[in-house]
Amino acid sequence: MPTNAKVKAEGANSALPLLAWLSPAFPVGSFAYSHGIEWAFEAGDVTDAKSAGQWITDLIECGGPWSDAVLLACAHGAVGAKEYDALREISEFAAALAPSKERKLETMAQGEAFMNAVGAAWPNKGLEKIVAAIGREIAYPVAVGVSSAAHNIPLRITLESYLLAVVSNFVSAAVRLIPLGQTEGIKIVASLTPLVREIAARAEKSTLDDTGGAAIRSDIASMKHETQYTRLFRS
Image 1 (cartoon, rainbow, N blue to C red):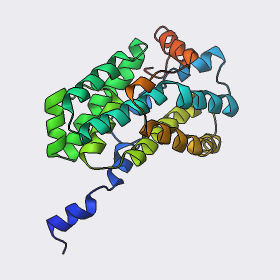
Image 2: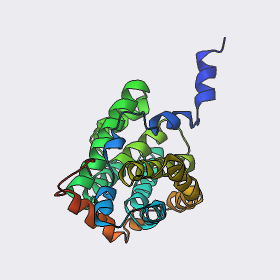
Image 3: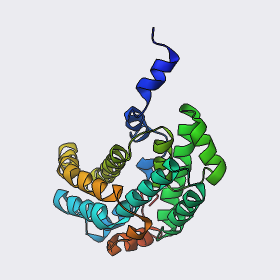
C-alpha cells in the first residue's frame, strides 16, 4: 500500500483535478450562461454551425475569453510568486473588466461557486491563504488560476483546459439554441482545438497590459440580453 507521502508526490503537478473542475458536472452553473450567444441567435448573427463556429472563434481570439485567459495566467503567476498584493489587484481588475451587468454576474457567480467547491472537496493550505487574502468572491478565471497554482498544476495545461471548457460551454449553448446536432457541435469543438492551444501559448506569456479585445458585437449582445423578452440563459 502506498504511503501518504508517496501519494502526495505522485499527485504533485497532476492535471487530473482539472478534469473534474472544468467538467460540465462541476457545480458552477456554467450551463446557465450563454455569454450573449442567446441574443446573437435572436438577432440572426448565429444561425448555423458555420456562424456559431465563427462567433466562438472571434470570442476566443479577441473577446472576453482572451482577457480571461490573461487574467488566469496573471493570477497563477502571482500565486506562484506569493505576490498577494498583486493578486488582489488582479482580482479587482477582473471584476471591473466585465462590460455589462450580466457578464459580471456570469464571471463572479461562477468564480465564487468554483472556489467554494474546490475548497470543500480539495482542501489545500495554500488555497486557504489565498482566500484569506482576497476572499471567495472573485472572477471565474482568477478562481481557476489561483486554484490551479495552489495545487501545483502547470499554467499551460490549465490555460488549454480552461479555454477548451469555455469553447465547449459556448457550443453547448449553441446546440440548445439553433439547434445544432450533437455531431455538428462536437465538430466545432474539434476544429477550435488548435486555436485553443495557440491562444493558451500567447496568454502564458501575457501581462495585464494584454487584456482587452475587439469583439464589440459580443459585448453589445450581453447588454441587449438583459432586456430580451424570452430567455433560456442568464447571460
